[in-house]
Amino acid sequence: DAGKLLATGTPDELHRRTGTDSLEAAFIALLPEAKRRGHHAVVVPPLAVGDQDEIAIEARDLTMRFGDFTAVDHVSFRIRRGEIFGFLGSNGCGKSTTMKMLTGLLPASAGKAWLFGSEVDPHDIASRRRVGYMSQAFSLYSELSVEQNLILHARLFGVPAAEIAARVGLMVERFGLGGALDALPDALPLGIRQRLSLAVAMVHQPELLILDEPTSGVDPIARDNFWQLMIDLARKDRVTIFISTHFMNEAERCDRISLMHAGQVLVSDEPAELVRKRGVVTLEQAFIVYLEEAGAQGDLAAEVSESSAGPVAEAATAPATAPATEAPAHPSRGFSLARALSYTRREALELQRDPVRGMLALLGSLLLMLIMGYGLSLDVEDLSFAVLDRDQSTLSQSYTLNLAGSRYFVERPPITDYADLDRRMRSGELSLAIEIPHGFARDLLRGDQVRIGAWIDGAMPT
Image (cartoon, rainbow, N blue to C red):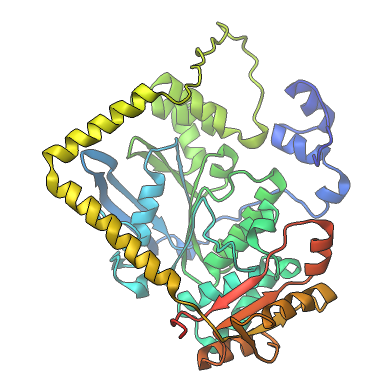
């Protein structure tokens, strides 16, 4: 942890030392007290009886084909309102594709799906506003701050302008983002970036939240904290949660799960019931049995076994049966004149067979040269700009003076805040707005990477 070794030993030794029954729990127990403070085991209250019959999502024979390849093959399931429903399956089995069809991002090749009784229509914006979607890659704009990401997504989802500030404040408080409002997403720890992504998905207060492997790559404590947020959303706000995961302990927290393989749903039921039906001890063992019954290859079952334990997976105890053999290294090949001449001859033959292609290639190059030459000959002068200087240091003021001293720019009175920036840009007073962040001079003197923000009027200046 933080570059320090917490403990070394066999899994059994670590279990005995910490009094835990899993390596994930042992890892948490071995962390310093400061990092464990406030952490508690995740407890999922049962789904309220009144929510048992209300259906949030229904898929019937949902199918997605890409050419001759069938990514999702006649998938059917139903998810109740306020339920935490898990999708468990190996990489490439069709989980993400199914989720994208339910959000309307991908039109289904066949079959139908309904959200809260209305058929999914990729062009129905009103239905899509009832859904929040969080992808594996975090749908965040890296050039915008935390606060700006929340404001932008609120506007994109049609939150009334008068409510945006209060809604953003609610998300900041609920998801613990108060200390990072001015930070860029790429500068945030993964756990905070994960909470920001969830806040962005919830800023328009959707009734359904679709999460595509949201906890990949985060530590166990951050994962548990994230799950507590989801449980609160499901049980207190009655938000339906549809989540895909590779972690078996996460799947066990779901009200029900679907096991998926090769584009098909193998079975859907409560995790404990799946274990009972197969007469095994763990959900992982039950999953492997279902995969074997579906005709999955042994190496796929091994992959599930290895990936299911997460970032603190149990160490294998069986000895290796054979040493791994390294693939022969291919020597790097340098420039080859013979190969270059071969490519040249091939291109010449293709042009000889297709003179139209050669004509278009020649004319296209000439046209591009003319356009570039004309474009570069145009000069921009007297571009009105103003600066939002949050650093107020000597270096930041020198930076502003350098711009003001150029014949290309005309300086306007400083910007006071984002509202002032937005008003002056919209009115046409400014063609360019520069934001100098806090710590500009400090980072510059340290030799750290320094970034500034720039807003440019999309109209072509004359």
